[in-house]
Amino acid sequence: MHTTLAGLNLANPTMLASGIMGYTAESFLQVAKGGAGAIVTKSVGTQPRTGYANPIVVQTKAGLINAVGLPNPGIDIFTEEIKYTKTLLHIPLIVSIFGYSAEDYATAAKKAANAGADAVELNVSCPHVKQTGAEIGQSPKLLAEVTQQVKAAINKPLIVKLSPNVTDLGVLAQAAVEAGADALTAINTLRAIAIDSETQQPILSNIKGGMSGPAIKPVALRCVYDLSQIVDVPIIGCGGITTWQDAVEFFLAGASAIQIGTAVADNMAVFSTITKGVESYLRQKHYKNVEEIVGLAHRK
Ligand SMILES: Cc1cc2nc3c(=O)[nH]c(=O)nc-3n(C[C@H](O)[C@H](O)[C@H](O)COP(=O)(O)O)c2cc1C
Image (cartoon, rainbow, N blue to C red; front, top):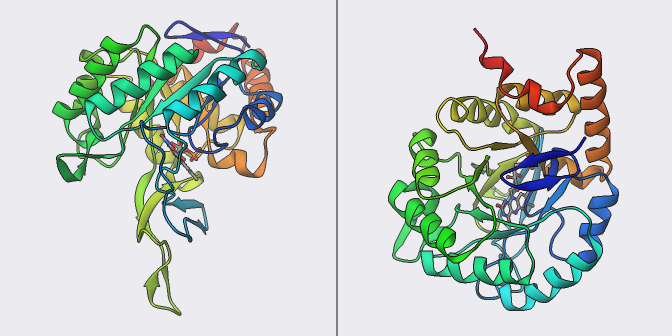
């Protein structure tokens, strides 16, 4: 089920979401064997980071809350892994970048692109260096500045991954698109907390974290639905996708591709299960390809 998105040739419209399978060529190959159409790496910054102390992940009834703290080897070490991965992998490798300023993002993105990344995805759920408390993805001005500088620094497709922790996602999406985003991913995790009734304390070492998994699916679906009425660039749906029915719902809402994160932790073959399910849905309903169902939920 080949499909194209912002100039990328995807083996199928399912992708690994950022952060789930780390940074190594071996784990990316495992994901490719599981049937993914493309891979997004864990977010990498200009400098190495160790991340937060344990506990960093809590299991809840309908998903995970994580506050991992962006542990990563730094882009200079990671470029070697990008080059090695590219010699083995036959699906697009999208490198996720985080930073604390537009310059950080542009520097890391340029190095990733030069090392062979097929595209870059910006994780903008990070505080700005000069504006503590606010995430870059919560300010249209900062988001536009970051997007613009990355766009000017690379010659590859640029995907901006939106944070749902905002009042008006449409304003941020428009800012990203006007600044040069070739596609949008919606959504990153929703801010959440877990508290232990025995210790009477927050469980995560960082106190708050990001919610993922089935609990956030209806929110993510609503974000995709809203965005597809606002922007003209392709949207990649992400949040709680576990079954092929979930995937179909995202396509109908307006997503051209989907990313899967939390569900991969339990089942690496989730990509091929979803792709097969979507294929048989399309066949049954007499559609030739997935493009034909993108946005159908908006029909009056
Ligand atoms: C353990 C964990 C680590 C994550 N790390 C990143 C990351 O480094 N960069 C990023 O953009 N998103 C990160 N995410 C968010 C996922 O890419 C995705 O947006 C979110 O989990 C919703 O999708 P899901 O419900 O399919 O997991 C992480 C999620 C989890 C659960």
